[in-house]
Length: 69
Image (cartoon, rainbow, N blue to C red; front, side, top):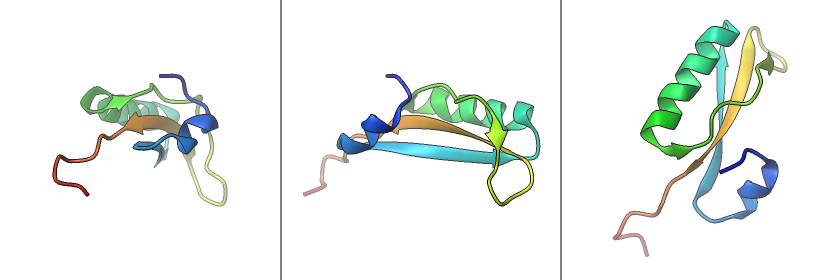
């Protein structure tokens, strides 16, 4: 999976944003999430708009549960 916005038009895909005080923390948390889900790695760290710290994004696939109508 590649990380770009066109994935948001596909069913069962979501963009996850991780805000943290440092780039190292944001990246570490993003890799933890990616290791548990079918997800991309994190984007390059960038300033968190309107907040202190930095943000990274990743894209994750979450198939519907079997009982979802």
